[in-house]
Every structure is written in C-alpha cells, then in structure tokens.
Length: 633
Image (spheres, rainbow, N blue to C red):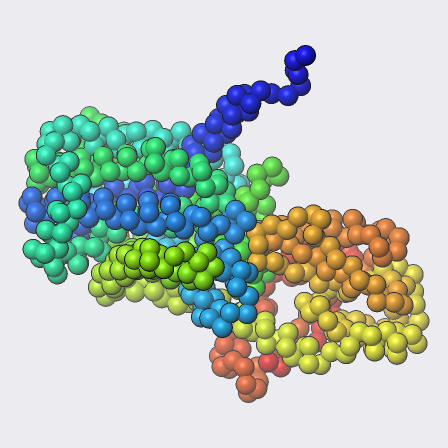
C-alpha cells in the first residue's frame, strides 16, 4: 500500500537542495557584497595608490599571486573551512565567538583578556561599517569619469545622494529589497567573470600567476615595496569577516556553496583579467576594473557596480544593527530603541541611533576624503585588526576547547597569525594618511563598550551591598504592611536581595500588593533560548515569587507576553490588575575605587540617554511606576 501522505526521500532531498540553493543565492546578495565589490578598487590602489608600483611582469604577476593566495589562506582556509565551524548555536561573529569560548570554559583566568579582545574586535567592526559604504559607493560612481572625464565634479554629489537615500530607507526594513539583492549580485558576479575571461584570452600567460612562486619572487626582489603593497592587496579580502558574522542569517552550508561555486571563481577570474589587461595595456592602471569593459559597456557597468556597492553597504549597515543588538543584550551597551521591521523575517531590525550616527560619519568621510584613493588609506586597518583578533580567539578555541592535536593546529595557527600580522603591520603605515580614522572610531567604541560593562558591574555591586535579604524582608516588613488587591511586578537586575523599588514603595506608600513578583531578565551567552527554558519560578512565601526570564542575545524581549504564560504562582496574570515598578538610578560620581571620574561621568551620561526600561521590555505604558534613587559608584 503506497503512502501518499509522506513525500518520498528523493522529493525531500530535492526540496532540501532547492532551499539550499535559495539560501546560497540570498547569501550572495548579503554576505558577499563587500568582498564582491573589492575588484573595483583593490588592483587600482595596489598599483596607483599611495605606494605606486611599476606596471611590469614582476609586479603584475606578483600582485595577482598575492591576491590569490591571500584569498585561499585568509578567506577559504581560515574563515570558510575553520572559523565557520565555531558557531554559537548557529550564530557567528566576534561576540558570538567570545560568548562560545566563555560559555565552554567558564571561570578561565584568561577570560578577562579574551573579553577585551572580543570587545576591541567589535569596536573595530564599527570603524569598518563607516568606511565600507563610503569607499565602495565612491569607487563605483568614479567609474563615470572613465566614461566621461568631465563628469569628475559630480562624483561626490552623486555618491552623497545615493548614501543619503540608503540610510533614509533603513527604517522601511530590508526584506522587500532583499528579494532583488540576490539576482542583481548574481548578474554582477557573472559580469566579473565574463570581463575577466575576455581579458585573459588577450593574454593567457597571466594564468601562471596562480603559482605562489610569483608572490615569493616579488617579495624577494623588493621586500619593502611588497610589504607596502600588502596594505592595498588586503582590500581584495575586505568583507571576509562578514562571512562569519552573517552565518546566523543563512547557515554554514549555503555560504560555503556560494563561495566555492560562484564568488571565489568570479573574483579570481576578474583579478586575472585585470592583470592580463595591465600586461597588454599598462596605461589602464588608472582604473583597470572599468577599462576591462569595451567602451559601449562602461556606462551599464557603472550602473551595475553602483547597485552592487549599494547592496554591499546595506549588508554592512544591517551587520552594524545586528552587532549593536548583541552588544546591548550581552551588557556592553545601554538599552537602545530597536525596531523590528518584519513580522515574518527574524533578525530584520532597525536601530535609529546607530543609523543616524553612521550616516553622519559616512558623510563626514566622503566630504573629508573626496575620492576612493584617499579613502583607501583609511580602509584596511579595522578589517585586518578584526581578522588578527579572530585568529587569536580561534587559537584559544582550537587548543583549549576543541583540543586539536598540537602537531597540526600549531602550524596552521602560526600561518594565520603571520599572514594576519603582516597585513595589519602593512596597514599601520597608512595611519598618517587616514588610517587614524578607524583607529579613533575603534578607540571611542572600545571606551564606550568597556565603560558601560564596568559601570554596570560596579553599580550592581553597590546595590547588592545595600540590599536586604528577601527572607528577612518577608518575615519583618512585609508581614506588617497593609496588602491591597492586584499584582505588583518589581523589575531588578539582581537575582538576590530586595529590589530598591520595593523598599521605596513600602517606605513611601506603606502598602504592598497581594501578589508580588520579583522579576529578573537574564540574557544568556547563546543566541536563542527555547520556550521550555524561558521561565523559572520560585515561591518565597507570603505571596512573594521570584521569577527568572531567560533570553538569547539575538532574541526580542517582550515581558508582558511571557508573563501571560507564567504558571505556578497563583491565578493567571491580568494586565489591567498588574502594576510594574521600575527603579531609576541617578549616579553620583565619587572618589570610591572603581573607575576614573571621567569614565563615571561618561557612564552617567550613557545611563541618562539609554532607552527607558518600559519601552525596552515592552511594558504597558499606563501600568508602570518609576521610583528613583541615588547611587555612588
């Protein structure tokens, strides 16, 4: 008897392949936009940037060889094959890697240093998120000067207009444009490959550049020129860290499939084509990417490249929102307004404060640097710094948690570290020309992230020191107080002691509700917490309950929705009979040991500007009571 209800194994496999392909196409649009737009400027900057190279066989073959082997070592081996195994319940990125290490080896003495490294990588990412849109859009729009040289004065105004439109569009959400991202970028990558093949046919000898000997010959012949050239060669792999950070959106398999089947071949064919073009026409060094195309195709190529850079910029901006959300949930940033732009697509978020800050800084970059060549000096330091930190964190993971055999883990990590350090050191030579910008942004970000984390820890310590044990409170004060009908929910960050708001309420109002819930929200160091593990309830007696609600660092927080499902603490909760009590602390900077006075003032300013707990936890506005207190840290 045939079973018509269940699909056959072949049909299930076919469906699996279809969804894998669909995800891979989506990944091409979002994940690979940044690395995909690098052919616009990487080759041009290596030969015509701040450290010009002579256009001859040694240098052209050497640079193509360096680009190929960098892609193989940094992107393919390090990120695609090794680091993408390190997923924290499906999520990737520096913070997820950090959370994974600290979750698997809690109480490790090195954890403080590792946390600082992870936070530094996150701060550098924000530097990168500012430079990528400015650099990629400018480099694409500059293509019109290849079509018509007299158009040079309109390059900056056109780039500014595109970027303004991009940032103003963010609040609408990316879901509706996401559907067209994949196909446009597929056409773009196909165009990269076609342009490459056409030019390789003019000079097939360029294929020999895949031999690593040409990279070695370049380095041996002119070590200083090769070292300085690394600062521009690395532009070919900017966006490699995005493969790992975006893993949560698409999964490991689709990203790997897209990289091996389309992105890597298209990129390398294009770089080989640019090398072949320079061997045949050295003067094309002015803008090899656009000069690869015949004259009639250059304007359409400018339009296609501009669309690709807009998509790449969108991916970086979405990444900045995602990293900010992780940092807030993990306690490195104050609460911010987070808007979920899609009811169906999880992870589609918009953070106004981040969006407008990025816009202002991106505009400042475009006005300040004026061209992609000038910006190339600022580009690279943040990326190489992040890559180097990822290698250090990976070393800890591989040796202490995965426990790979030392005889092959050590040489592998040594290769990654040497390559990353060489690129980072080369980029440090760009500091006077503009490399200072991402370092300043990184320093500001690092200061903010560490100040908030440290300040919160100090404040919780002070509140804990002054709090009363809950058992003592229930037996003494609570027993004597007048009880009124209804439920009071007291929010507190500490899972022990009596919340400050509860003490103040009793002191000033002289009453307590019939049922009192002391509620603590805990953000776990995993992306998602299942509904079964969400709620913990402990009865304390006298109508008091301590409730613990757990969330993952990628999840949306909605306290009333969860409270409606709470059991084991009396009758079901009715919102119209429930009051939420929040404690609002005012910080007083003091000379107590803890933080420097200027950092205490910074922490106080961050607290004042944080989004209210009422909005962040989605509490009903007409059911919230805020009680203030002053704390010295």
